[in-house]
Every structure is written in C-alpha cells, then in structure tokens.
Length: 468
Image (cartoon, rainbow, N blue to C red; front, side):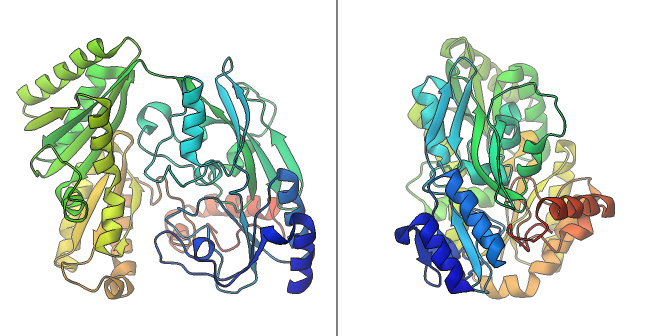
C-alpha cells in the first residue's frame, strides 16, 4: 500500500517533489528538538489543485498527513509521528502573492509564503501587515493562521485571526473551499474561516489567505524602561494607555533572568539599561509625524519617572536603535535554546492578575524545585506571558525535564486556571498539551470540538493525535 501511494504521489507531483522519509531533519524534527518523527514521504505541492490531489490520494490509501509550513511551531504539532506511515505535506513551494488590492487594504497570498515576505509585499505597496513575531524570517502565513499566532502587536492590531479576511482550504476529503473576497461584512451563515484558523491543521489544509492591511504609520518610537516590580509594569501600562491611547502598539515585559541569558549568549547585543528586576519595552506609533510622537513619548516617560513607576528609561533615537531594542527582546527564545532544554508555558491571564500569579507561582516552584530559574517575559499588554522554567544552574536539562516536567506543568496550569487564564495563548495545543487539554477545558467544549472534527474529518486524515 505504501509503494502504491508513493507511486500515486509521484504521478501527481513529479519525482522531484516526493522525498522519501527517514532522513529529512528539516521536516521530521521540530524546532525545539523535542520531537523526532519518521515520515513515509515529504511531498511538496506547488498549487492548491496539487494539494487537493495529494489529500484525495491519502484518503484512498488510508494514510494520514501532517500539513507543514516553516516548521517553527513550539508544541510538536507540525512533525510526523514515529510510525513511518504519515505524509508530511510541505507548503513551502506555495509562496506567491496572488493579489494586492490597495483600495480594499487587502493582500492575498499563498499559505507557504514566509511572514517576513508578506510584510515586505505590504511595505512595497506603502502599507503595513502588522503581524510580527520572532520567527518571522522562517514561519509561514499558513502556519501563523493554523495556530492563530499572536506576536508583539496584538495590543493594537489583534491576533492572526483578526488580520485574516478570507481563506482557501483543501478539506479532509480533497475538495477546495475558496472564500478570498476580502469582504469585511459577510453575514451569510456560519463563519467557516474561523473554524480553520487556530485548528492546527486538524480540519483541513489552508492553502491561501486574504489578509487585512493597514496604512503605514508616519512615525514609530521605541522606549526601554527599568522597573522594580510587575505591579509597577501594570501601572505603567495603564498610564501608557491613558497617555497614548490607540497609538500604543506594543508593551513587552522581560524579567532580569531573561535578559541575563541574552547577555550570556549574545554579548554583542547592546542593552542600554543596567540589569533590573523588570524591563519594559514600549512601542508607539503616530500618523502625524515623529515630532508630535516624541513629545508624547517623552511626556509619558517623564510622568512615569515622577510617579515612581520606573527607575530609568532609554528612548530610541533612530530606526536602527529601535530595531536593536527589539532584537534583544526577540533573542530571548534563542538564548533559552542555547542555555538548554526548558519547560515552556505560553499562558494568558487577566492583566490585573499577572503580578500576584507570577510572584506566587515562582515562590511555589522554588519551594518544590529549589534553584529553578524563571524565564518570564512576554506581551503584558494583551495578558500573554511566556513563563518558562529552566533547570537549576549546572543541572542536566534533559533529566530535569524527564523527572519534573509533568509536576511543574500541573503546578503552573493549576495556578493559571485559578486566575481564570488559558494554558495556551498563542502557541497552540499540538502534541505537547494534548493530554492537558481535557483537564483544563470544559466537557461541553471538548464534546463540541470532537463533533466538529468528526464532521469535517471523519477518516482522521488531517494531523491525527494533535489538539484532540
């Protein structure tokens, strides 16, 4: 049966686009190097019609498939299992701009287009696609939509879901559903688009998307602030909302150990402020020009200093300095990777609950697992923390994970649930949190999700064993 399927796939795609599995680390191992699978083959379709033909072939042969974009996911949802029987459906050849409509402020692209290329296509037209995250040089827009990616500008522009006006999808039986009109109002029944966004490839394959663009701001400024506590960070956020309103674009927090890791592993990156308990990165934009924006930003920082909310601040004087500040923030994940395996928690909480949650949960972790190091950073403006646990200094990280990951997850997720939060803010469920989901999601919600899965993918072809 496997040989027959491979023959069918070669007839559909051509010999060069069907890669036998077993030694394809770029496709069979995840970015975190925690999951290593083995594929029957990796296939690389070049069109939606070819994707549909691949899905139909898999259905005929009773073989499941794993959609894959840039393979930058963090929850093990985009690599094959160890059976050697799954097909990895790579969308990286599908990377073209289909249509740019400046009057409608929309851009329609193939799902395999790298996020940075999508941003550039918008910029070339004098417009902005605001989705931005650390992996934007390698993640793809299809993967961003499949996980409903967040990133650093959710505070103003929303998640990937809010930036998508239409989809093209190959269903689990190989049909093609297309709704790429770019309408902002279309009240004609169930919103099928929202079923596929955030579904992590378990209901169908996103092959194209119509994305919402925005005017480029006339000016953008970035500031770095030193604070003594998360409670001060929250107070600063409230002041920034008051002073900047809708022009507040990003509000990131980083604890001292996060930036210490960057200093250790990337000493060439300048950090203009002295080490402090918490550092805040603020970005604001304005349509009226830099002079007015700088005056408002300086007013915010001056009042924050006067009110005792911050101890020091640095305001970027150029675009290069602004990029440098963001580069430090975006290097935290890479620095963690250099430090060794860690236990990641991508959580969301009411902003008001974050100071007590962080203090209480860190104290509980230190009591049960003395010496653990907390890499606590993220998007305070929208309540999303990356609350990651590194093993004690000099410890054996793989052994620490094997022995303590389950207990640490239970402690953290119990605390999240007690605060009315979520165990997955922007990374998804994948395989990593699949067994945790039933303990954290209501029975009614899970039953509805299973009924949707059964209705849209009755044969279990699409990315089985993920999410549910």
